[in-house]
Image 1 (cartoon, helix red, strand yellow):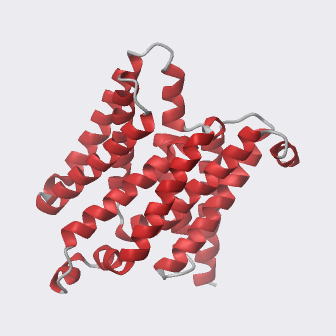
Image 2: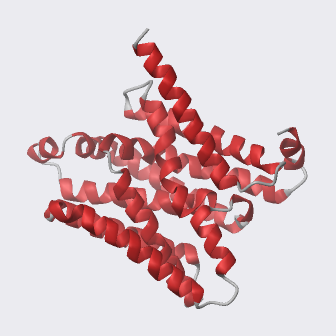
Image 3: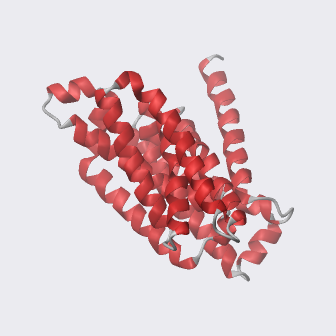
Amino acid sequence: MSEFFTALFQYQFLQTALLAGLLASVGCGVMGPYVVVKRIAFLAGGIAHSVLGGMGVALYFGADPLIGALVAAVLAALLIGWVRLHWRTSEDTLIGALWAIGMAIGILFISRIPGYQADLVSYLFGNILLVPERELWFMAGLDALLLAIVALWHRQILAVVFDEEQARLRGLPVTFFYLLLLVLIALTVVLLIHVVGLILVLALLTLPAAIAGQYVHSIPRMMVIATLLSGLLSTLGLAMSYAPNLPPGPAIVLLAALAYLISSLLSRRRRWP
């Protein structure tokens, strides 16, 4: 691990990768608690995997793949949210369909572009070491947007997360805030694409928040702890994967899973002495 910190002061791509991980951690930490408390991880997974379709189409037509990812994620979030609110019995079917259709469309379009097969692997599993410096501004902008919206409407979103019916009785526009929540999750998914990829995005979105939830029961405190924990796990995963030349994304996720397992054992022991 010491080799990584020595190289960090020498190579700009490592500095960019570290900063990308920290920026992604902000989105994870802020939105993860909502996903965990609302229990919509599977829904977030459907949004994540539909993103590949947008990226594939954007690449095929020569556009920025992140813009394609952003459009696909938002559209998938709105569609899933609308179906859940109006046809709840069809929710699981739609999520599964979007999951498969998005992956299939993305793979088909990317396969038609010579030279992009290697990029397909990085989109699926992430490659934080190849994050362009210009995309740090894009990630920082998404973080700023997430923080601004959450700061403005946290209480309303929280009411929808805990009890939609009660929020509706209080006169809150539940449909608007529920769809807004899903769109924010979609933005977070786009943030995580380069760090851990679409396949592993759910782990980093939920595991730090789940660990925080084992020790605190306040959403704002969960956000702070999950953000710090995500940043720590991203940094350690990047550092531990550097010397043996391992893929950083899977290393970060495995480290997060190990932290969750240890935390679960410790919290259970604390409850049952």
